[in-house]
Image 1 (cartoon, protein in one colour):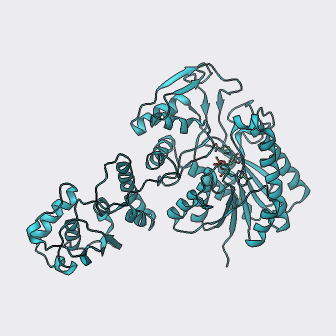
Image 2 (cartoon, rainbow, N blue to C red):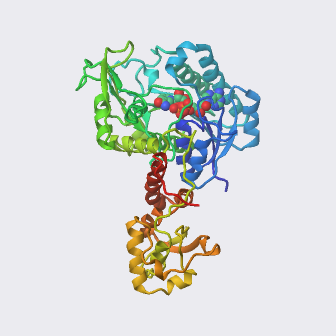
Image 3 (cartoon, rainbow, N blue to C red):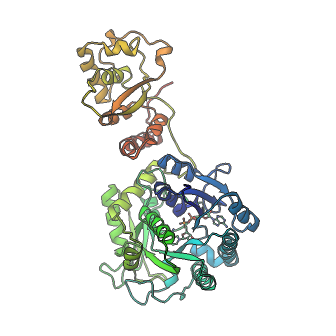
Length: 492
Ligand SMILES: NC(=O)c1ccc[n+]([C@@H]2O[C@H](COP(=O)([O-])OP(=O)(O)OC[C@H]3O[C@@H](n4cnc5c(N)ncnc54)[C@H](O)[C@@H]3O)[C@@H](O)[C@H]2O)c1
């Protein structure tokens, strides 16, 4: 039987790309579209979705498509048998929306109308919409429940979100075939825990956590906190932050709900943590988790900023059978991992193609002379030795004396020096022997192996399974950071 296919609009963007990971891991086939209005493009390819493929080991069908191009959107539904849609595509920078109001209304409203019409033509009626807590305006009460009044919105971006919700309500009333879930996000933050995927917009935004990171990285001098006299525990503004992967799992939960037999019409759900954090708490936790210092400057309150915006997640918890898993420490850690692995986002991925000289054949000795019989052998790894000397064959290494093994393991495990435990015992390497050696190894050896592998080989290992990723990715990060520092080892 064919698995369900979900169309993700804005799939190259921050939320869309992270949703793709969870959708694929939940068994959906994904078709993603984007016009790259706010995401990085590499010759028609979305680097963010390439990272999704790297993380999941599955392919994502991607098409460059502008939702304003009605014919292309209709064609898309003819080319693919789409069962349901997650609609994240929109322009979202509040400041811009006040200056470019027609562009925002055009893009967000007309783009959505084109999409809904194409869905109707293709008999596709299951729709998840990326809405926002901004539809509630300045909250009349907290925690905000879904029945809190909406529409008292002061900016154009927020009004596009509100108008679309109203349109979706009318649509579901006009035709019971529609099943629509509007997810009202409360401050999505952070990145995929692998550090491979994160937020990399092409238009500048001023979200607080990315801003804190820029300051920690020395790209900006300080964080300005607007207002310290709100009625909150420390006087600074309180918001409800949600880890991007919790947000993503909320979309899978919403699709499951749509896939049930219930007639939903239009339903709205808050996606947040259900807990508030002040800006000051956020900065303190970030400093603690990352060991960085973030200078602060206080300024007057900004007009229109609310003191506390916190959601009630009760409805989502009970009706979507969804619960957030990540807290503030993970939000900070995962964001920091992404930012330090990819300080310039997807634009300039710096990966060393050099092999480290350290270790070389000693590692091969070490691996080959170990008794693997008690170990759980999980796969093959290509060890690419790069020292200037090597045994004449892998078999020869296997029959080497245990003293050679001990010496070799000392050099290999320490990961320092020239790595050749006993150079006198090792014949000179020939061209043929400098090719890669493939051998089985147990999982617990991975950290040792990783130290000696070129980064591009590490990527391949990281693709294999989540267990391997956990071990391999810190090494990629370490190596990538070293490359940025100009401290990577030399090689061929
Ligand atoms: N990030 C947040 O804090 C937040 C909060 C609440 C709601 N939202 C909503 O969530 C959705 C996704 O937000 P995001 O943070 O991932 O933003 P994003 O800008 O990273 O992603 C949106 C993507 O949509 C694409 N896009 C825009 N117009 C398009 C069009 N006409 N045709 C095709 N693609 C188009 C952009 O290129 C971008 O890649 C948006 O609808 C946004 O309003 C975001």
